Structures are given as C-alpha cells and as structure tokens.
Length: 163
Image (tube, rainbow, N blue to C red; front, side, top):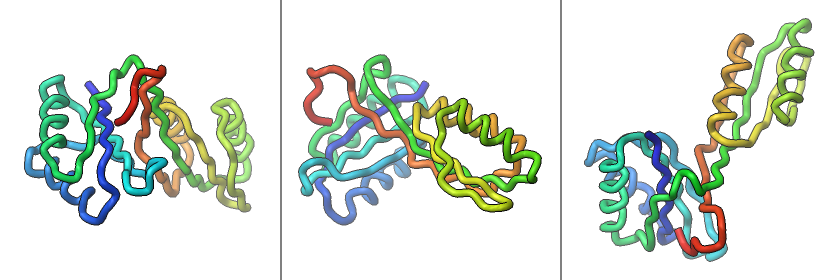
C-alpha cells in the first residue's frame, strides 16, 4: 500500500540529504519525493510516497519527526488528498503514427509542447495512476525520454493547516 507523507522543513542546505540518509539507514524505499518552497521562503514542503504497510508509514513519520530541521510531519489520509504529478514524454514517431499519438494526447487531455518531423513531446499532469496509464498507452511507440516530477499532494477540505 502506498502512503503519502508531507513534511514542512527548514529551507536550508543539507536538509534533503539528511532526510534521504534517514531513509537509506532504515531501509525504507522512497517511491516518490517532491520538494518545493512554500509561501514562506524559510520553509520547504516535502511530499514523500512510501510503499509498505501502516507500520512502515508510522516509522517513517516518527523518524522524520526526530530530525532537527523538520518542523512538522503528517501522514495524509489517502481518501482525502488531491495528488498530482507532471510528466514530459518525448516520442520518436514514424509519419503514419503521428495522428494516433495526437489522438491519445487529446483523449487524455495532454498538451503537445514540442513537435518536429520525427518527434513529439507531450506534457501531462494528473493523478499518478493516470500518468501511468498514459505511459502504458504510449508504450507501443518509441519513447525516447520520460521526466516525471514525483507526486505532490494536499489534504482536501479546510481543517488541515500545516504539513
């Protein structure tokens, strides 16, 4: 089972290194990690997705809370979060394949952000499962490159101040 954990941390050098080191020492595997600034330039938000049971998620949360630069940690309720991921996919195409790929892009509400005589680049942001579906649909074509941001998430509703 996948668990989404949000942490507010001090925005300074070495914090991400200490967090990833904690995961390595404890043998926890990071499925996805995304870091970005918040409205306060002194604080960053880290969204971590880990795969494991409830015990693993609890241990990750407890261990993160022990780090000095971590301000707040929350395991987000999977039923009450909005998750998104951004992907760029560059595909090498034969001329007769271009229409098929453009159709897939339209159906999935993707944006075509670059096109040449031999390649097409698609931008797509949605739930991670839909990103996986798009990649699966395009797998029969020659995918040259894929860049994924990792999952970002926020708790829905109004009673969720902080991480």
